[in-house]
Length: 363
Image 1 (tube, helix red, strand yellow):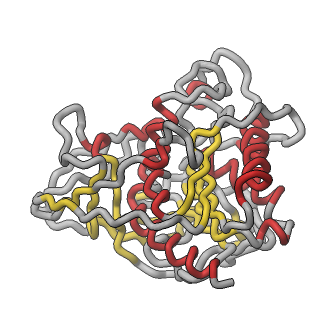
Image 2: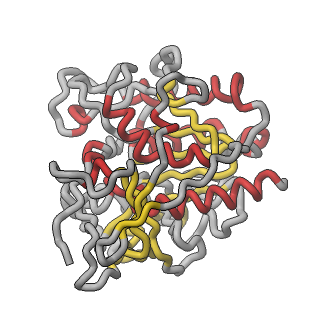
């Protein structure tokens, strides 16, 4: 078994973790700049989906590229902390950091939905690691996303169902948006196919599926359930007491875990990993000639709890002779597998959205 870590370029995609304190009344939002939107001349969310399947023996097979069907629903994606600007809040300039993470996390959903992704004045990596040149204003990030959401509803939705997708800071921001603008508004709530709030902190009462962060929107527990939320934080072992994710200080609450590979409580499923090939090069030659690499059945995933934490446990089930690259925790166990939260089960998430889209359209 090869032990080299998966040092992906998504190391930058880590959470600021303090979005819940943002005040929605602080700043006037800027005019929306769309990172992804149908019709854009340059759109990272419609990148090529050509994929090479890597088998346990190291052999590679090109997966047939399915014809793109008409997307019957929309997706609204908010990206994680990637800005490398030195200010505490980013500006709205589109850089390689934003296009790269949109390609890695959101572009595969474009086969299921029209993807809308706003730029927002997020809290930067410099702010996260204490080297920012000024003071952060978390409300800027939230207000930009809220304004983009309202613009999407007013101009582009036209009665279509929508999946909300966020990772890390994007997940925290969408959690706040849902609580404030969707959860208690029945007309808007009816539009929600599902919310994929990954690598964040959706709270529920212990052992329950609703009643914490949201009052009306429950956890997804069936593939044909709509208007529900999937949330999880991935670790390869129990999160330490100083973990960045999977823990809450709120009494009687826990961080929601829904396993994309098996929605029902206690279910173990096989992860269908989809990774951009560029993130597997390790400075050398790409492992495949296609933009994507698939690695199926290398990990199982199951929601777990213990020691005051709740998380998505990823277990390596490859044999000693399995030649495929493993996922590591280059940021340490306090972060776990946070940087691959989305991609380790991206194939599962795509299948789930397929089922949910079909179910929503039958309502």
